[in-house]
Amino acid sequence: MGLFSKFIAKIKGTNDFSPSDWAELEQELLASDLGPTLTKNLLEKAKKVKSDNAELALIEILTSSLSKNSHEPVVVSGTTTIMVVGVNGTGKTTSVAKLASYYKKSGKSVVLAAGDTFRAAAVDQLNTWGSRIGVLVISGKDNGDPASVAFDGAKSAHDSASDIFIIDTAGRLHNKNDLMAELSKVKRVVEKVSPINEVLLVIDATTGQNGLQQAKIFTECVEVTGIVLTKLDGSAKGGVALAIEAELGIPIKWVGTGESESDFSLFDAQSYIKGLLS
Ligand SMILES: Nc1nc2c(ncn2[C@@H]2O[C@H](COP(=O)(O)OP(=O)(O)O)[C@@H](O)[C@H]2O)c(=O)[nH]1
Ligand SMILES: [Mg+2]
Image (cartoon, rainbow, N blue to C red; front, side, top):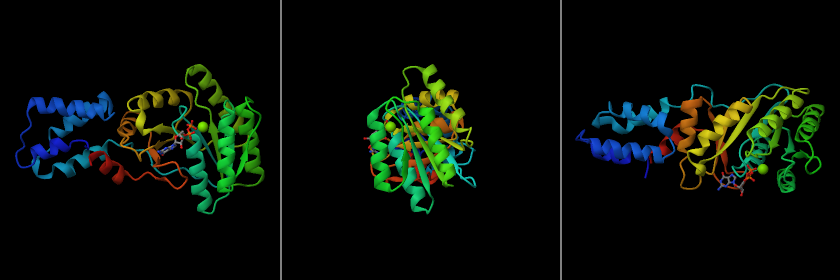
């Protein structure tokens, strides 16, 4: 059931909502991964909602919780460099492929770097995607230095004057210091060739509240400029991304809705909020 559905049903025509109803609503919002801060804020606003326009008022309240930063992907003239980060299994490599496919279809030239050298399977996975989509994938040795693969990719993208260069990365999060060191090294080394214009953090809608914690840790390592919210095709509605928007100001830019390269779209605030409510 969607957010606030009982609330809407109950106050329609009555405006009658008891203290225990409010407590129940609070539990529901917390269970939807909105986190304590946003939940408290939403409840305060919901208390002012009148019965006659409850649905619209709630859409407005949720929409106003979105980040004020632009939800549009960054594109610069010359080569746009995008680094994709996130915890293992969230959908980074798949999202890199989906981005490549999206840009290729819109007529842009794309180069990828297989920066997850930690797992041989991850390099194979990206190479397979690359040949399926028809884009160049730069990869290095297994267990090689991800920064050097990213550097080679950046040079290749530049030398061929490609429009889009996307770096896949490893997602080991067991040691924050290692991760921080690795991601900042990738960034530093790539920026010898050109600046990184966008850092996309991949958040799996099904991982719940932990997503907010992931976002906090990654923003300490690198300046995250946008979220790719994956696995919205399941029953999870991705409430945690609203908490990330509200608390950290990071905008969702893309949405993943399946395993194939076409299951991907630009973030649409209206359909996302409607999804949360429905
Ligand atoms: N249902 C669904 N599965 C996805 C989506 N994005 C990725 N996956 C799957 O999630 C799994 C992990 O994806 P992968 O890209 O390898 O994650 P990574 O470890 O972060 O690189 C794979 O089985 C993907 O097919 C999505 O939007 N929806
Ligand atoms: Mg991967």
